[in-house]
Amino acid sequence: MGKNKLSKFADMKVYPNVFEFSFQYNDNQVCEMQGKWNESYFHNNHPIVLELGCGRGEYTVGLAKQCPGKNYIGIDIKGARMWTGATQALQEGLTNVAFLRTSIEQVQRFFAQGEVSELWITFPDPQMKKHTKRLTSTPFLQRYSQILCPNGIIHLKTDSPFLYTYTDALVKLNNLPVEVNTANLYGPLSSSEEEQTREARAIRTYYESQWLSRGFDIKYIRFRLPANEALQEPNIEIELDSYRSYNRDKRSGIDSRPAAK
Image (cartoon, rainbow, N blue to C red; front, side):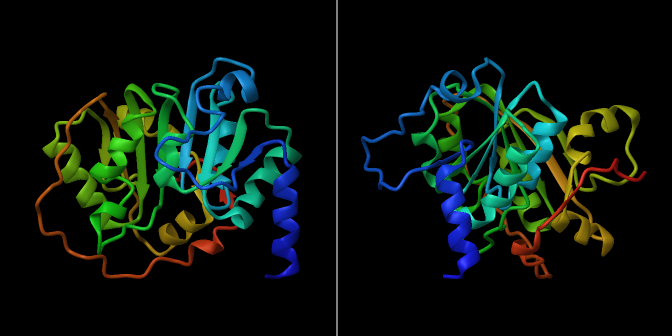
């Protein structure tokens, strides 16, 4: 392990906006922060929004700067990556940002029912070989339903035609309330569509900007997840993505400029 990574891990242990837990959960263990994030850390009653698989945390920080009336928590298992966003948030004095180092499979251990109002899933691995690993699959949606408020919002932003097609089929099959669904987020939009997608278009990661520069479309779905909903997996054949994604470790910056029309 390189010295730079060791230094980042040391920083993370003392950063006040970072939460790490070294123990392994069993079926009966929950985190002491469960149900207490606003009371114990944010010290307000603002809605809590999670970014799942936040990587370096650029999107989490970007959202927090864009919407100071909400509290944001970036979640990822990779601590050295998360250091970038956590450091930026501290340097800029952002009090509505926190980072949680854990696997997304454990997310229900850290939040109480109804404690979270929204989830952002930004450019995840499409996991084309195994549906249970896709962050919009029914196993993950069932986890999310344990922490989201009734009809909580889920945002998916992806460059993957495969994951977009899969998620689109899943929400339609289960009649989940869809607020926005576009296969070309930065394409021609009506005035109402521009307003509905303003938040999603306002922030671009380095990774997203690279795909746009190559002419690839960005897809975006925003839907609501009713509580205690029994969900079905779509039984369809989906064409595999024909390209390789950029190395996600290279997402080292963020572009918050308004999207070009």
